[in-house]
Length: 213
View 1 (cartoon, rainbow, N blue to C red):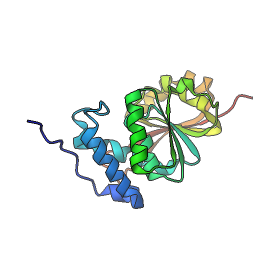
View 2 (cartoon, one colour):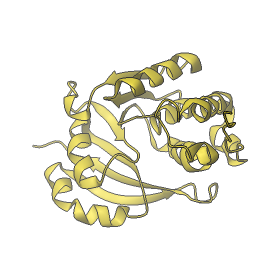
View 3 (cartoon, helix red, strand yellow):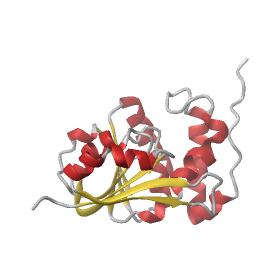
């Protein structure tokens, strides 16, 4: 007998954060909650905390972005697909090396009617377009000392790294000091986003990338 998947009820904050984009957000949450585990995208405990831990944690940072943004290691679409839903005025490039995850991302882009998304099957190190993005984001990919060297080269002069991090982000900044300097990431700081909306607000690492002169 197959047990029914318990998907977390939509929190009140969802409609506030997504506004008139709440319907595609609901469709994505439903699809990820129902099919995410069997497709190897999320663990068995995640549907029960899908909105609060994952979707709203990602969506609350949407106002920070403009222009053309890359999401490195998109996986299930966190944060890239969620941000693309919340910000249809921003162009998103979802960079993901695993074929089954790329298939999922492309399916969701099609089903949700997102015309502001390109899915690229690649590792960040295989990016061919040079430092051309206005910003790069990532969530739960790796520590800053390994993430900065693969994300900063994608960002134009004056663009930003806007990386969703956990509670240890301050320590990660200290550990990544050499990498930040080598890749000319300046004004490195932590911002806490969504404290007035979420029980657990989102911590974001932000830094400006400067071209070599």
